[in-house]
Structure formats: C-alpha cells, structure tokens
Length: 441
Image (cartoon, rainbow, N blue to C red; front, top):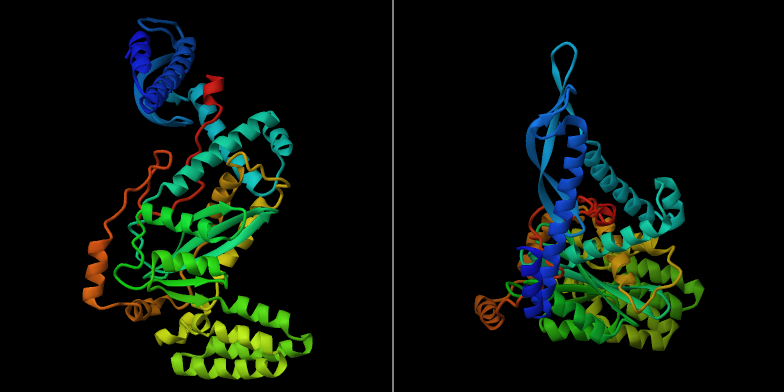
C-alpha cells in the first residue's frame, strides 16, 4: 500500500490493527533501505542501468538472500556483479554493503557472547569499535527476542514424565522459579520461569498455568512425578494442577536441613544414613533405610525427628514406585535443575541491581537458561525411563476421563514466535537480528 492509503487504514484501525500496520510499514522501510544501499553500490561499480561504463565490472542478474533485521527475516533481491579479468575469465565481485550487513550480524553475535561471559558494555564497545549505547541497545533488543522465542515454543510435543521445580534468588527481593521437564527418553527440557518477590504459591501457580497454556500435556496419560525442595508453596501449587502427582522431596535439601539441626559431630552419621537411603531400591528397602535414619535422629534431637517424620511421604515417594535404583541419582534430588541455576549465576552474577520496573531480570534469565540448555545430555539411567513411565501409569478409564475433562488450552503467541518442542533444540546462537540496521540504513 502507498503512504496515504496506509495512514488512512491506520487511522481507522484499533490499537492491535494499528500495531500490525505500523510493523508492516516499518518492514517496508527496512526493505527499501537495503535495496537502495545495494543498488547505489552497483551503480558506482557498473554505471547506470542501460548506460554501462567502460569498467570491466558488469551487472550479472540478481539472487534472493535472507537478511535478519529487528523486524524479522527479509527476503531481498541482491544484485550480482561480475568482473572480467585481463585473461578473459570472470569472477564474482562481492558487494561491500552486503558484506557489512553480514559483518554487523557477526559483531552483534560477539557482543551477546561477550556480555554473557561477564564483559562490560564499555569493554565490548572498545573491542568492537562501537559506542557503549550501541552495545547496550543491541543487548536489550536481542535478549528480548530470545526471551520471546524461549517462551513462545510449543510444549505439546514433550512427553513429560517428570517435572523439577526450584527457585533461585538473583538479588534481594527477587526470586525466579524455574521448571525443567524430563521426557520418556531421558532428555531434559527447560520449560519456563516465573519471577516474584519470594518462592510463594501464587508465583508457582503462575508458572504452571503458563506451561499448560503453552500445551504441556503432563499428568494426562500417566501421573506426573514432581521433584521439588521442601517448599510447601510448590507442593500446594502442584496439588492444584496435578492432584494425583507423585511429589518427591529433594534428599539433598533434607540432608542439609538435618545437618543444620544436629551437632556437627553427628553430621557424618547423618550423611552415611542418607547415602544408604539414596542407594536402596524399592518401597520396602526405602522404609527400612528411613527407619534407621529416623531412629538415629530421634536419639539426638526430638524436634528434628518429628519434622522428619512429617516429611516421610515426600521423602519415600520415589521409592514407592519400585523402579530400578539406577534412576535414584536423578530423581531423588533437584541436582539437575540446581546445576542449571549454578550456570545461570555465572551469567547474571555481574549484575549489581535489578530494575523491577523493566523486564531486565526476565531478559537476563532467558538468555542464561538458553546458554545452560546447550550443554544438556540425557540423564543417567535413561534406559530405565520406560519402567518409570509404566510405574506412573494409571488405569485406562481414569486416563480417558482426564483427557475428556481437560481440553487443550489456547497457546499464547509470546511475541509472534513459535517453535515445535520436538524439533531441534533451541539455541541462543541462532542468527542474530540486526538491531542497528534501521539506524544505519
């Protein structure tokens, strides 16, 4: 549409339609700027069309190329230029303008990598020969794109057998609750995260609600195994969304709590009995190992023993499934998600203050989680996941009633980006959108 028609349509549209028209207009401006830049260089090399200069360089048609801008992918027809050499052969002449666009894409990729490794904005600017404001703006725009793509993925293709939930505190009055799923083949998937002032029930419910809205089909064909810390807020939220879920408490957190309540001279015995509890297989052996631990703690601290007794069901939940003990190392603790948290601290650790009035924390967490996900491997004992899935199964009638009562919810667009979860794992090293192209063009 021409400019006058576009302005008339925008004036008559609602706010959502207006945003769409504005974005389409902006894409057109970017496309026209790219074409004009390429054509100007070709004219300088070859002369005007139909009035070629005496230069040995000539036009040689065009080719479609894909250029990523801050408005998305753009397919443009880039002119091709060839040069006739003195020996009569020809060679392709690469347009400097096109190479500059590609170079800037690589530059912003390097900016993203450098900031994630803890480099300051001023240091990256000196390294790349750009201003600090350009570095900061590039980081803001690109990290927002990565966050939208991370939260816009379709989760319906993940056959989630287990869900791990834990929180990290990147700063005072800032808590981020992260969810990680393990599928039937032993692959790990970072699903999403939710911000809050603390690890409370409403924050966890908000996280679970968004997971279901994005298509996560956990707890339908079988019960869901949820591995968590001792937080009652997470336990309540899990019961709200998956009433029959098997909730396993992290034994690392249990051991840490016991060692904190007992004298230091008894900690060696506590660790010894906890290690036995982690190693045994089945409900009967688990009850026996737990009984030994409880008897020892009762002799040393009655209050600690009473607290431990109240947590018996959560501590022995996984043992009650009677699955091979090779899975204990994975599902008796939240270490898989704790390792993710450790990696995220390496990325966000240099941030001194978080601005709650912006999406700063969300953008940093999104990039940090994507970086952590790139090193994922299948869990230890993944060949036994079939046995775990079978142990979590429910009767056919119960499964059918759950499927009929839970229609798939609508999935949010999250910035217009979507990606099937059963395709290749998402990577933050995907092609970098150019945040400075509009300014330079």
